[in-house]
Image 1 (cartoon, rainbow over the protein chains, first blue to last red):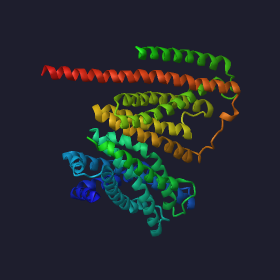
Image 2: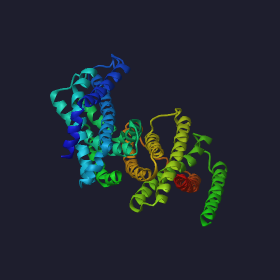
Image 3: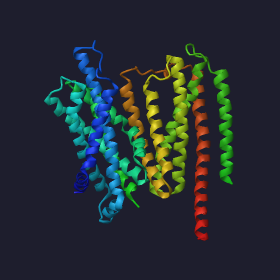
Image 4: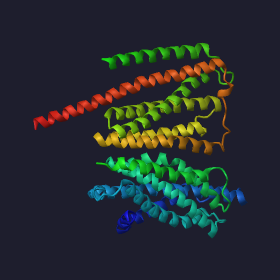
Length: 229
Length: 226
């Protein structure tokens, strides 16, 4: 229900949601321009080329998601602070951990949408030709894990940052360094997917799966302290 | 006055340890074959790194203490510790880069330990920026929460960057091949840096508490005037 409230709010201001999406798209575009139209030297061909392109695509994909996430987290947390919405919900006797849960769910949906929309764009822009429909499904799986982790961290840090009256730049300074382990894990897991290869057995997937759980536990424990007035 | 006395004692201990460490490291510790004198960085570098970890753990633990007891002193310690830890982190990064320059002929080579130091340094830079942007009770509560979050993230950052970097460089077990005199130098370096940390942290805590007291007094004065 709380997630529903959050999503309804986001939906009512969908032009702003569109901004998040557009921003993610622009990040991909800017990176494509920055690295030139030929991402990998023409001498590199065959499988090596696919792998190099997939690495780039995966990195840019997650950078875009993370940056778009910072914007989305900030918007959502600020909407809660404005007009004392959080206070009202707390007075209605709603648990802090329930609020946190709702926030994570709604952020997962928003970022999930961004992730989904970004898949065809990234594939097209970076020309990872080996990418197939089954890979898209695998990528959705990986992205879902990554997005839940990002949301669990982001929703938490955003309420901290906006609670202290901070602006968006403060949130990015606080959230991005904490996101680094998750971003490395997500990038490492997506690269083989973009190259249409099986995941490597090197522990990154474990980190990607464990991060949301850990963040979630911390969030449930500490969110109470963030919200009290 | 007991506090002042304790501070003087700590200052004296820290000062004599610094002197002893400098003398020991530059006159007694053997000169390393490959790196020559540049290897002396090692004692202070590792000492600072160890103290930085200690400082960040103190920040996290006193964050928990503050959330449980709501004693402003606990938060003052957490904040002071983060600030001093950040300075130590800066020392670690700079000496680490100098080390990289003389050992591998490059200022930065994404060596996992150096990289995770950088990320931790950034996390606590975030802490300090955040802390300075909030006021009063909210500042204490929010920075405690962030301090705890950061403390939990530190080992994850460390682990993940080790995993990430191990693909580039095999981990080196330098400590096992140390000369016994180098061991002593290392221990002395760690001890010295810890003593200096305690002195700085306690001084910073007292400053924070004094600043808080002044702010409260000033507020009362303005209120009474109105």
